[in-house]
Image 1 (tube, helix red, strand yellow):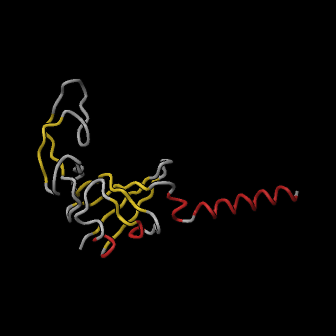
Image 2: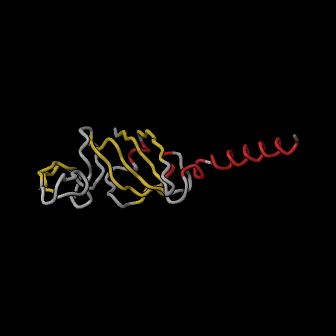
Image 3: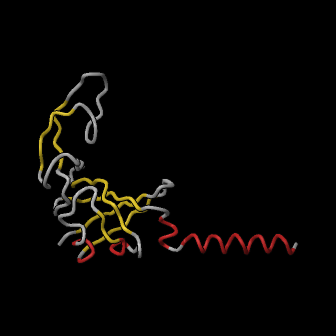
Length: 139
C-alpha cells in the first residue's frame, strides 16, 4: 500500500506537510507532474492540488522531461537534480520519471490561493484579532 508525504505550498510561500496513506494515497498514484488532484486527500476540501515534483527514498528528484516513473541516467547541464558550479559543466545524474509510483516518498504540490484559508485558519485568526481590538477599545 502506498504512503506519501505531501508538501503543499501556496502563492504566499506558506508550506504544510501532510502524511497520507491508503485510499487517499492511491489518488496520487500514476499521476504526473502538472496534473491536478482533489485536495480532500490531505484535508483541503474544495481545493485542487497541482503536482509540481517529488522524490524517492534515496532523494532522487522527479523530472518533468522523463516519461514514466522509472530511474533514468541523464547527462545534465543544470535544472532539476543538478546545479553546476561553473559554466559548461555537465554531470551524469540519476533521476526519476514524472509519474508518481510506489517508489515515490515525497510529493510536492501547489495550491492556488492560501493554505490557511483552505484549512479555515484565516477566519480564526481574524476573529482573534477582532477580539484583541475590542479589548483595546474597552481600555
